[in-house]
Image 1: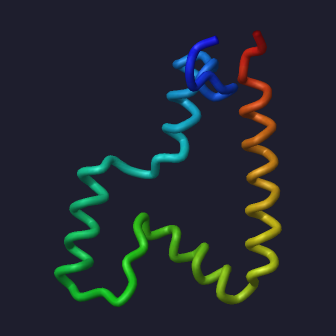
Image 2: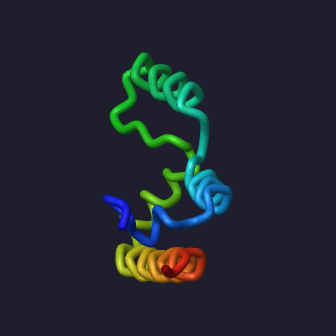
Length: 88
């Protein structure tokens, strides 16, 4: 077989790109601009994108709830990867 072949590398490239695009919240340039702006304003914590602050707050208030949701998401993504991987 091909070196490095895994279920992830055997996926259709369009599906793989679509999967990872959903996880990328913004362009690298947009991220860099926001991060540098926050550094210039001497922010104690820099969380980008801003909506992740809600996740941080929820994790501080209800860590078990966030852990359970992360576990559900991990299972969902794992199932999606298994479904979209091809078998030889």
